[in-house]
Length: 140
Image (cartoon, rainbow, N blue to C red; front, side):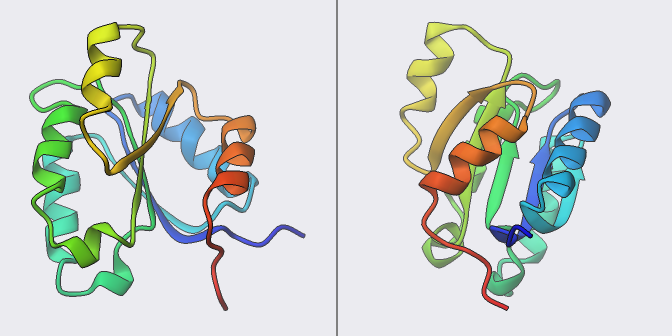
């Protein structure tokens, strides 16, 4: 039986299908004990702002799409980097998108909080790589 890597994971993606796939892969792989998902950047930011005073409740991993209407993944990151440092240290941001734009790749690299970029959809192969490369596991 696999140990969950994290207590909480967050998915931010405007695609209902991609959120469904990601949530199912995370649960099937026992990657996270709990998963929250948001279809908009603003809803995700609002949620995170309610947790700023409770860093232990902050998700340890955020799967973030780049291309979304109104506010995109880069807008999310522009707000995310303004969160307190102790909150940010508890979390790994993983951008997951279908983009193949070199401009997007260059822009991703300007955000130190973004640990990895993977192509959609989220898969067990991606979770395996994350298990191998992220250096923590949930302590029960």
